[in-house]
Image 1 (cartoon, rainbow, N blue to C red):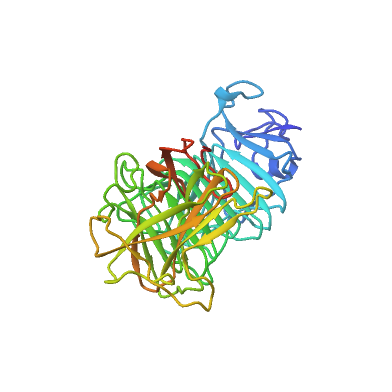
Image 2: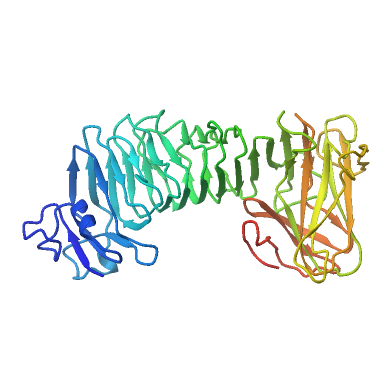
Amino acid sequence: MTLRYVRSGASGANNGTSKTDAYTTLAAAMTAAAAGDTIYIASDDSESQASLLKYTSAGTAASGVKVVCVDFSGSTPPVSADIRTTAAITTTSGAVLAFDSSDSFTTYDGIQFTSNSTFNLAWNPRVSLKFRNCALKLSGAGGQGFAATQAGCRTVLENTTLQFGATTGQNILSDGEFFWRDTPSAIAGSTFPTTLFSTPSGYIELDGVDLSALTGTIFGASTNQMMRVRLTDCKINASATIAATPTRYGSIEYARIDSGGTNYKHGKILNSGTESTEIAIVRTGGASDGTTAFAEKIVTTANVSELFPFDSIPIAFWNDTVGSPITVTVEGISGLGAVPNNDDAWLVAQYLGSSSSSRASFASSGKADILASNAALSTSSEAWGGSTTAFKTSVTFTPQQKGPVLLRFMVGKPSFTVYLDPKPTISGVTFAKTHAPRPGIIVNELQGAGASGGLLAHPGLSGGMAA
């Protein structure tokens, strides 16, 4: 594992073996580097190229190549105190900046990369890149934006900002995995895209990213869209749209997303409908995070039916009852004018129904089978802060093991708005608070007889805190 050095103004032998004999371009160092090598690039490095600039890498999953910006006046080899963020590499004259080499793994730390055209994050399939403390910029109005559209690519941004050269035509396109974490003021400069992500497929996860500079759409719709998104603990602009309705079967799930200091907002956006946090139409004595009462608002589109319903964010709680039936009831309200039928909306419980198997069992308040007649759900006398027709739906089941229970509310009626209280009533258990710790899960803090206490997040979904 060799240490290599880069400085654009180096006047020695330019073979990368020392600070004096540093390569004058990062491209030369990357070409020479082997798996596990570390490349130190000088904090005053300034490179410019008017043609395609493409970086190859020999890094592997076990022995990646590291490129770190450091102060050359510091220690040799450099130490933590020498790390800087000012090395600058630029393309001009409409030239593309690209990262190449299939099955490669490379980390860049503290570098400002500027492309005058498309910023190509995956020139070939299965390129894995991590940018830490970097700035990635587009200086021209042309090109596609930040593109990682090859199969199997993986891009990780940590405390790394993006800057755009045009409001339209430049987006983030990722057909592989795209992770963006821990980045304040994530969109730099004064030009902001009307749509940040525009991608048909791939998996995107944002954690702790400040996108408040954007007033447009964060996740746009695209043809045959299949992308899956999780957005957690991020700041957005009050005028921004989190996502356009997916054109096919993609999903956008978010938790604790806001323009201010509130931390209860969460939701889900599908082609079949949306789920969001409601704080006006709420059940008296219903779900709360300890400060704010809320309900789940589900609005279906025309793209939903009994056979392909909208599937709500799961509600999770810990169950200690074994061998005895328990009944779970979820309260709701709608403006339908009549209680919904059990093919319009119904509850599904997923629980551990066998003492000898971890395979889940299911109980449903929906129709008994596909040919069965529908029936009205039960009326409810619970008080709500709005809408007109209160209802409730229940399932009874007998767990055979202690463990998590997941509740999903299914909505099969098109163009329908319904409000649900995510604080269910369960025999022998009461809930103090309801939370959305991660996209894709709502958890309840348990209090009362038979409750084990603590918080539960289902490990098969998004992780979280075990009870």
